[in-house]
Length: 413
Image 1 (cartoon, rainbow, N blue to C red):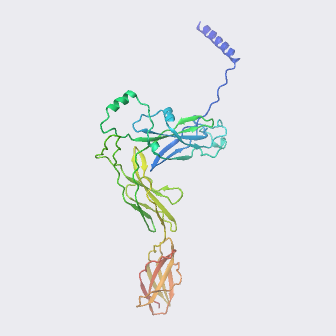
Image 2: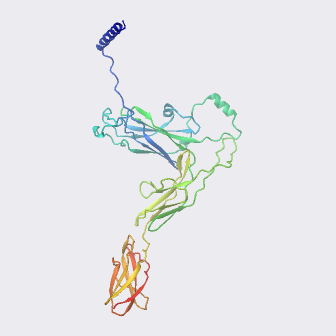
Image 3: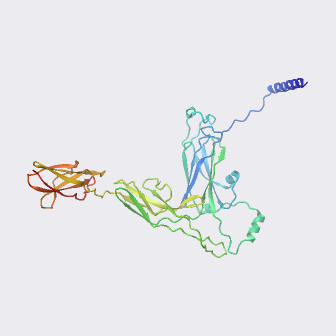
């Protein structure tokens, strides 16, 4: 009985499917690929400027590549530190678009490959924007308007109770954060998922070092500056209240970053902020001009904040350093000749040696080589039986002459 019913049910199902086969339903909408969110976000603050870096997406949300992306929109909003996290919709509604970065886009967004397929399968990307997968950076100069937090709707009853409980001195100002987020825009103008968020505390930056001294030798450049004291400032008094004084306030840890600003772009020379007010740069190239600045650095809410730059300290490196005097000078007598031998100099810019001589017992040595010689030896043809005093000096390619070597005396046979 069960088999018969099952067969009957199967026949009915097949009949229904056959009936449906003759009907055409509405066409399915094309699958729109959306770019994955930008990655590797980081924010750094230097004085009143914020540098936000990111990596341009190179894949779509389904893992295929290249990304169907034409631009990246950058959003920013200032919020109280105590504000509850915003949803993606809330952030996009409250934030301001501060920049839009053009990205090279695929000619055919549907011509993608999976992770295990070679890139050669896809067509070249079009446009003059950023390469997919490349690093990018956005700069924003903070203004007083940006420092004010956006208004967040509050519970009116809770706000009324909080106002009745305020102390006479007024409520202290709430620290604020500037939050940045990125979203990729597809070639059809559709928004992809929002990136992770990065924040920057909007607290006063530390003061910069006032002066940086520079000294150098053949091996390194040494920078020194006066240590900066971490300031402790009282919060501003609210209108109609007395100013308050901060007692036993914790001072932030002060450190420093050193930058080479000789070229069009500054180069950070310190991998991490240094605590001591001195820095050694081993890059010395004579004839080259080098400029440095130092920025005070502190960490607030795990985000680095730097001061404005110190005044530039610049120097054109000149070789005014004489080489070391030759060592181990020996005189070997032979018939009518005295041969001088010494240890070769290790100076990298050595031009040669100058040999000096005087008839003993005089110590008034005079050069007997018109030009510096390159060999660490010299044969002097002199009369037999006459005693002579010898010494050698080293000369570098800048014309700096070393001190005199040890003296030796000898006579030819």
